[in-house]
Amino acid sequence: MSLFRRAALAAALAVAAVALPAAVAPAGPATAALPTAAVALGDSFISGEGAGAYAPVVDVNGVAQGFPGWSAPNSNAYFCHRSPNASLFQADLPGIAARFNLACSGGQPYDIAGASATRTKGRQVSAQLDQLRAVAQTHDIDLVLVGLGSNNSSFTFGSVAEKCANRFIADAWTGWWEFWAYLGGPVEQKPCTDADLATAAQFSAATAETTAAVRQLLTTLDQIDADGQHRVVFQDYTNPLPTDLASPYWTEDDRDDTRDKFRALGAERYAAGCPIHRASLAPGQRFSQGLGTLVSSVRTTLAAEFPQDDLVYLNVQRAFDGARLCESAGSPGNALATPIRLMDGPTGVFVTSLSGYDKLDIQRIANACGTYFQTCQESWHPSAAGHRVLGRCLTGAAATGARAVSCVRAPDGTITVS
Image 1 (cartoon, rainbow, N blue to C red):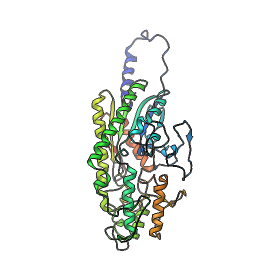
Image 2: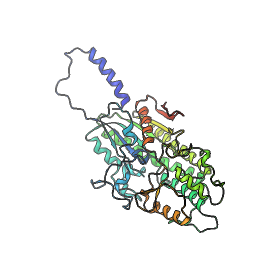
Image 3: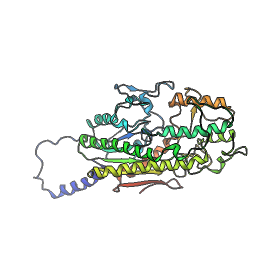
Image 4: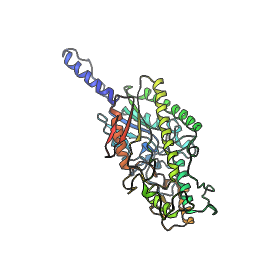
């Protein structure tokens, strides 16, 4: 039963207990209620990517996979990166007895009803609905947190981030006349545009794909939930980067990012966690807003199809206001998102400074991310501190009587859900 409806029912039962005479009592033993549960489904922004302390993940064969080593295939179930620091575990959810994180970093709409392992670049985990059915056998599912849409058949968050960061790094370390190639071939050095991130047609296709997957989720929930009462929270995405970088990150060594080759500036922004052209920031913001529109649209469409279901849209696009990477001096220590971090091979040691590296070093380091994506997949995701904020957002969404709420961070760090 949803938290909102549970409170109303408790009040009604209290009144009934006073009004009914003692003689009117139900005959026979009462059936024991299942313990209540909150469940997280979806992708990396829900699974806890970036929040650390990742737990073993049960693979498609039922085997719990712990950390397999940095050189293991990225398809390993462990790299779903389910963190005990994820927002689901940070939220204040009165009445919830257990919490289950079934989300998977890199999760796509396909993975809701299909085993992730059966698609390209999928991880070795069962369909999230199959995992949900297992939870429903032992628990009454009261709350479901869904984060879905940033990865789909048209685009993925990881590929978008990698594209724009690589362009900046290539531009910073190489001249237009120099040969430059990563494993996948030459890398563009111009700032990202809207079309580089996602076109209108791609957003439309992603919306349809996500809607179809969540429709399957709602249908399944209505079939398997013990009492048929549950709140589903549709969370969107917060951008790890600001609308513009703080002025200390604009120039270095008398060069800005519109010049050809600006290694000192490239190293400075990498160390701060924001290796990005300033001109790429506005398209990135519009991409985030597009994801918000996608999630809101999915919720609106399915609310019409499932009028009896308790569906809430949680807008978190302003949850990191004032605390994004390079939004102020002192980044990444004062940010709520993880910085871009790479390894020089699957070493387990992140490169925190690119100062002194030449273009061949940079090429080698960047190629490690392409070969072993797990060595860089935390980049630009909410940190443990960021997930604590998102947990407060979820607290508000779980208790609200509204159908859509926004979670906003004030300059003093106060979080408001309204």
